[in-house]
Image 1 (cartoon, rainbow over the protein chains, first blue to last red):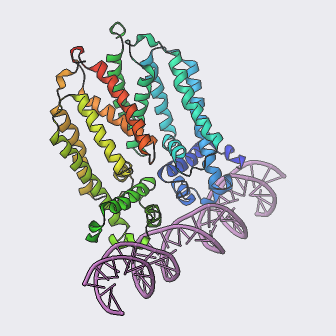
Image 2: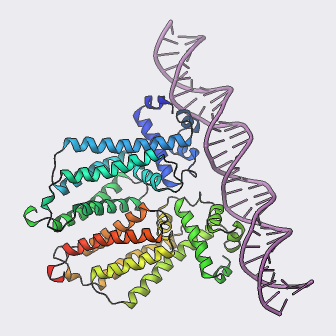
Image 3: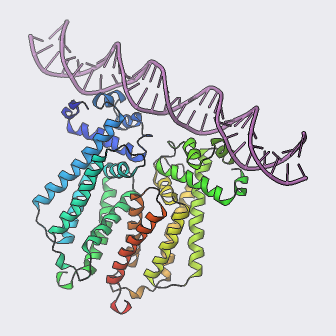
Length: 206
Length: 206
DNA sequence: ACCGCCGTTGACCAAATCGGTCAACACCCC
DNA sequence: GGGGTGTTGACCGATTTGGTCAACGGCGGT
């Protein structure tokens, strides 16, 4: 790709990336047209192909960028806060995730689609990159938490996964969403998390 | 539409409907081609337009059929079993749902997409049909259950919704799936349901 | 005022794909 | 062999596709 893309003002980079991810999130790689991406970004098609040599390169760059952004955001946020309570940390993590959704509204949908799409054009290397991020983030998270606050018999990994799945389900129900919708969803998510906390934690930790 | 469609052997009807729903589930209405549907069904494009006057009619028929199938399946299954235990009934319900997924693998995805897609071509009447089914099914379900088995402070509606969301999340992670994959997902789902049962039910009901 | 530079445009291309049609086919029962 | 029925795939004009390219506009330097 043309490295001058990175000389553009960051908001303009975001605009192009977000528009592209939103479009790729709506349709298959094959059926997503460069025209629609350009139109969504309010930019000429010529510009797209000026910075990216073809649709494929744009797509692969977007995926790479999304994974890197996740990795960086999670790692840097983990480093700086020392919360060891499972649900408080999860709440913090969700806030961070919400921030990412706000900044890159089409990202999660795009990444999931790119990963699960049949005839995906992802390189094995990129697939593995995502695998690693997902596997690491949960384990890393669990290893830092005070798991003894849970009642006996609770499988904390299952709790994380259940809440993650619920979040994914909520994401699947909404397309591109406004900041307000995101807050509503976050509120609903918190309700479930609090319910689990109330009944899965030993009483002395409530 | 051409009513002779219903004279076809049921498996052939299913083949065409499932192929169409799988294709419409992958792409926007506008970007889904009749060619790809026909190819997936192993049938000529001419045949599609023989039974359905155009793409739009096929699409609307599919949605209507899917909703009706849901409604019928749920109602008839509710009528015949009298389980009043929340989690046992939910398990039974999930088994039924899995049966539908097996028989119509692309249905849930298609319905969700049709409902949430921007520039959706759904008529308001069809939208409302789905709204009613969703609203009714949860309420109907809850009204039949022994909710006093829950510990105090548990909101059963939230429990249903949480598990539904998780199921949706699992669905979003998989495209068209084999029977075996479905069973695996069902197993995972059961794990979460059992966890909730274990900690949300009063102890005397365990 | 003129230049050269550079991010940007949109008209343009051949090729592919689109929704939809239709004459012809294969098959079966009479 | 005749008629009926379910099915095909070549075919249509229109649109869309990924990608190119000559030209534009505005700005900093002189």
